[in-house]
Amino acid sequence: MKTLWTNGTIYTMNEEFETVEAVIVENERIIDTGDRDRMEREHAIDEIQDLQGAVMYPGFVDSHLHMIGHGEKLLRLDLSEIHSAEEMRTTLKEKVYSTPFDEWIIGDGWNENNFVDRKIFHRNELDEIAPHHPMMLTRICRHALLANSKALDIAGITKHTPDPPGGVIVRDSNGSPTGYLLDKAQDLVRDALPKVTEEYLHRALSTSVEDLTKHGLVGGHSEDLNYYGGFKRTYDTFLNVVNEENMKFKANLLVHHEVVEDMHEHRFAFGASNGYVELGAMKIFADGALGGRTAYLSKPYNDMPETYGVAIHTLTELKNLVKKARRYNMPVAIHTIGDLALEFALYAVEEYPPPIGLRDRFVHGQVVRPDLIERLKKVPVIIDIQPHFVASDFPWVIERLGEERMQYSFAWKTLLDEGIPCGAGSDAPIETADPLATIYAAVMRKKKGDPHQGYYPEQKLTVYEAVSLYTKGSAYAIGKEDEMGRIKSGYSADFTVLSEDLFRIDPENIPDVTVLKTVVNNSIVYAAE
Image 1 (cartoon, rainbow, N blue to C red):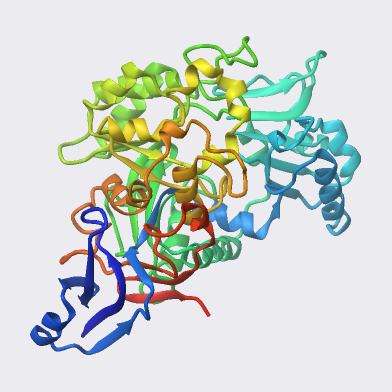
Image 2 (cartoon, rainbow, N blue to C red):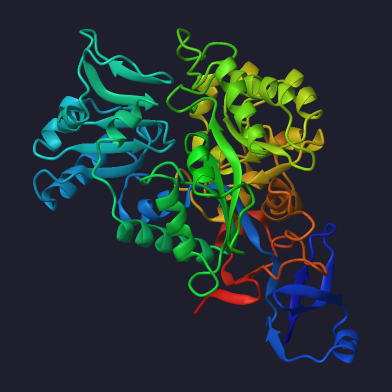
């Protein structure tokens, strides 16, 4: 069956502003593009999809997010839009009032930088709010959480509990835990949570995919496989939800290094796919995040000179993890926010390069240095950037890093100009999953509605560069640049159809554009009413 897509503006993304009149799809692949009259003469068309003047792009793919976590955020108590400590207190009290005793109160997304007083709640204050409920509140960066005394007790955390490797239990002057846990210390509480049911996982993932397709996303590169009862259970959830018969979505799953052995014990390997769910690179965390001052820096934090951040692994440990990935013929995806974490990651992949034909990825790459940029040019790697971090992290991040480091921080334009390939992701649920919001942040370097002219405007991307991150960039990240990310013969029939032309409208209006259709393998998986 041959389908003709036509009667709109169709951007191929092969070259800037290149358009075609029509596209023909057969067996889920594009087989021809170009002049409509010619194609109608040369092909027997079975179906016409009339774009009715809309604008079609290659399908947008989020290069880094947490799909089940995004679904959980939609199902749980969302604290990300709270802008004062008092509002957060009131929201938590309302949740406690409606929750049976002893049931966990779980919230996501609080950010003290949204509060005038930058308040971080103490466990004693959480105890006043929830004396009969264990409470766990995850910071927006997911590298820190707050727990009340009941949650700490269940987790077995006392003043005598040592800091776990790669984590910090924040303590008061008497050495007692304050309830603020950083990076690997979070696992002490997370491991004490009631085990999630398969029905819950199914609902969270289904909720996530439904929301992602509404935002015009045809796929995403997701990291979930170490958090919901082990590799097999979580992987089976993806296979049961995302498939030809149920929900069509292109999911590339990063495999956390702690479950790589589990993956192979179940006779799966890198690249295994059902056509929609594919096993990807081995995920490693090298450091934390700037918000909680756990990103690992080569010089101390400007606003807390006593700390450089947290190295999740020593350099030797990180090298050994990369070496393990190579034994399994896998590329790596290393979370690197601070410049010293990036330096460690470079040492590791330089010593243990990926198998021929594969490329690694460094996730985030927020703080770099000129010498690291030169080294990045020499290794087969792509940077997964999150432009929406600019909208969320400025201006407070300038306090963290100081003006001197800002020239090479959040420096997306510099990376592209230096020839370093990049893809764009949201890091949802940490940020909004909406690709139009991310594209806006990349182009305008600010929040929508902010009168600021854009933070470090020399780093602003063109709209074409920003859209390329979600199309060609995401495809390149997983080695599929010859079959995804463009509207071209032989490529997957994955399309994002919008109400407006992103390349022609005022960039200020990008977040207001409507997603009209999301198309995966020539199937319309979302259509606006």
